[in-house]
Length: 488
Image (cartoon, rainbow, N blue to C red; front, side, top):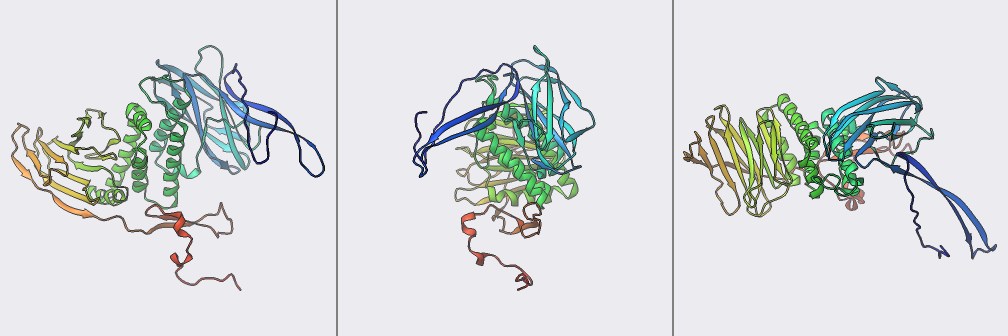
């Protein structure tokens, strides 16, 4: 660059070739002349450095770890191994390089092998480590051996151990581990696969979308946020249900992410983990109590459709496109975009975050002859949320019940075919109520000793999102009880 005027920026580009896989540090020497100073011309020099990843375009490792750990603290290093090729990857080995550990020691095995990773899928491996000092966690992975050997060596450490921070690392706060372990693991698998696809060659896996990094960053933020809310005092059911809605497109309706979620086994496993969290909540209380909590939570997020069924198989179909969401045996047909089924024992929840022009068709199919219950949360044209109940539906083992959800239909009568012989035996009207938004309230307030060790910083978790620009007025807040003036 010949010259650069004051208060401006410029950029240069170098083309380099990666000869060896791994994370490499690239250094640039900078030199220049500064003119216009009172004491005349000054010569300037400096060095800039960054990390560049050279990777196999068909097999990639994304590393997840905490940001900072304390001395003697045990923590997990997660590795999401993504196969972005069109062939299975077999016997993928990951090893901790003992000579490459700095400030940490392993707990348990230092080598793990994944039997097989199907095309367009990922597997998650966990290594347990103990920190020997307080500092920032850094890690990188490099392909070991030559040729087509699917083996990776890992280097990791705490503090400045000479290990470059990999650009393919995902740093999560410790609170993220507060999420259920199965859900956290499958969430990392989805994020790791999306992260790898974002840097894979175009059309590496034609059946899967190539996500942008911004999309992955949003998902990582939402995952960390759910763990943070749980650590602050949010109940596990609400934290998991909120994350499920956000990853289903409640906020942004990201088509590429939704394609990854619906098109991979890892997305199905994440849905199973959400269903397991629902099942645990039902076991601790009741199906009705869980339904009430879910409805109160989603009243703020206003989904396009929420259906909750018990003792029957639940199906959702778009009246516009005919695309379906239905359990068939051990798998789920997930044609309908931005929609998912969560199975929780005898109960099933369907959540849809994108509306369809002509509405939806809901079907219940009898399974054992036990009376079935159906509840639907449905927004009307005025934006109000209707909660429709059909309790104690008498369905035979082959029976079927159908409801057309469209404001143009009006009465929301459910057509009941008790024996499944194609004859409607009754039209059943629902018990209906209007669901108000959840009251604005404080869920929890916790002192944050990491930000301020004197305890003057408090994290407050509210029932809904806040407009931060409107919080500048101190009159909006009151402190109960005596207020100290600092001893003055």
